[in-house]
Length: 93
Image 1 (cartoon, rainbow, N blue to C red):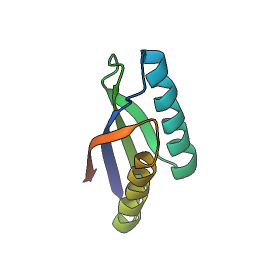
Image 2: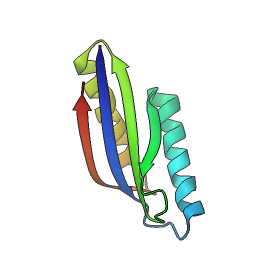
Image 3: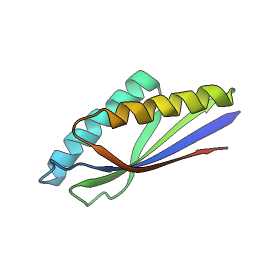
Image 4: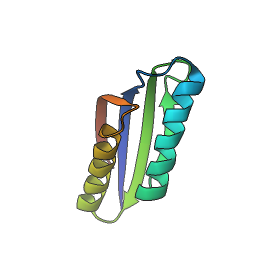
């Protein structure tokens, strides 16, 4: 069993309040859950208007599948106009 963990630090440059940031983050997390079947949660920068850190996880029997799935998630996040990826890291257990 392979567990893939992706941590993504985002900047939400258009956010002028926590409500603005929450709209972007919730839309992003809902899409990742629905279309990629990933577990997703905001894990840091909860009180910051323009920063968010997301934790994503997947479980698979195949390392290549887990790597591909998390790479697709990174690519999707990178294409979103409301959020910029500042940094990300992956870990496989």
